[in-house]
Image (cartoon, rainbow, N blue to C red):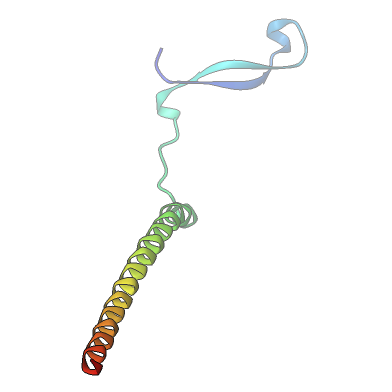
Length: 94
């Protein structure tokens, strides 16, 4: 059988002999299917946000780590130069 299968709600009192609404399987011909639609502006914005928010957090974390490492290495060099100055001063006093 060709076509998409689905469910439909139909009033089938004449076929089943009981009044009421029933859910019945139906098959749609393939020529009546709805083609895929391209996402519009709002959908693209939502998809973009889904990808950009975690990427922004990752960039912020990596940037923070790099900043702290550079700051630490600069501070370390500053302390080493200060130690050398103090050692040179101690040698002059001896």
